[in-house]
Length: 117
Picture 1 (cartoon, rainbow, N blue to C red):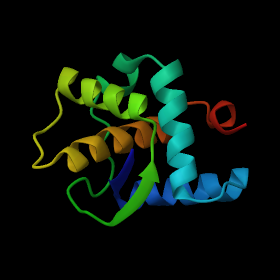
Picture 2 (picture 1 turned 120 degrees about the horizontal axis):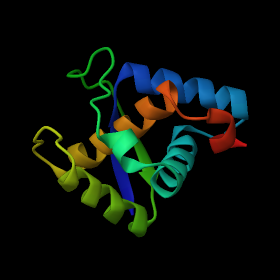
Picture 3 (picture 1 turned 60 degrees about the vertical axis):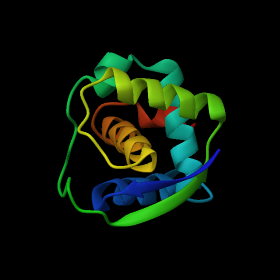
Picture 4 (picture 1 turned 135 degrees about the vertical axis):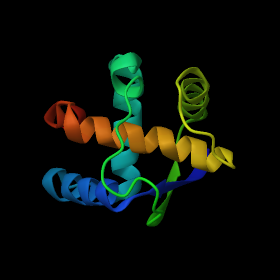
């Protein structure tokens, strides 16, 4: 499923660093790696059970178009409904919040080497 992910400056900076450090093609590729690895191999309570807003949480900075597997998108929707996220006006914003949470978790706690190697 092709979708647009709304990122904040902090998430974009993290992705730019990951792209450079691991010679990835672009932000979409790094998001696919992160979503797949975190959704499949990390405890969701640890990732989504805590608010991980950093920096300008309420500013919209950049939109990245990314192709994600339908199964991953469904899992992201389930996670959004399970955890106590703020209410957004669109599904795109809801799914973007899940991706931003994944990026923040990866930046703060995940083993980046394991995800991208």
